[in-house]
Amino acid sequence: MCHQSVGLVQHAVESAGIPVISIALRPEITWASKVSRASYLRFPTGNPLGEPNRPEQHLTILRAVLQALVAIDQPGTIAELPFRWRRM
Image 1 (tube, one colour):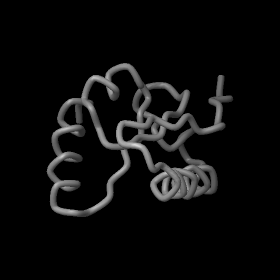
Image 2 (cartoon, helix red, strand yellow; image 1 turned 90 degrees about the horizontal axis):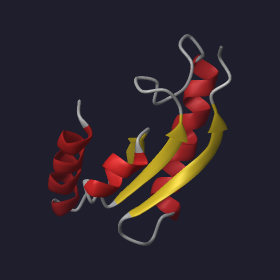
Image 3 (cartoon, one colour; image 1 turned 60 degrees about the vertical axis):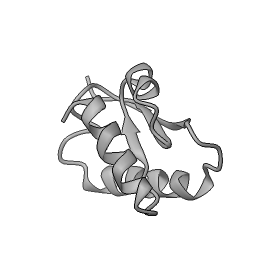
Image 4 (cartoon, helix red, strand yellow; image 1 turned 90 degrees about the vertical axis):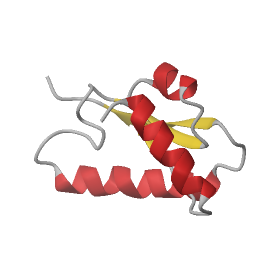
């Protein structure tokens, strides 16, 4: 799904009163979509939760994203998470 589509869906869900957070791999595009909040990960496109076949890593990242959902209090914030891609 493209960044712009995610932004449009996020706006619609937020307008219904449901808090939403995006996972951004290209923060400049996410910023242009004017989403209410997002978490940024320095991962390759197509790997928003980390390396393939690493379910513990995926769960750790998902928990961090949900914590960011609660912690972000300024609209338009993109919070960079501390995870880095290590796979070669």
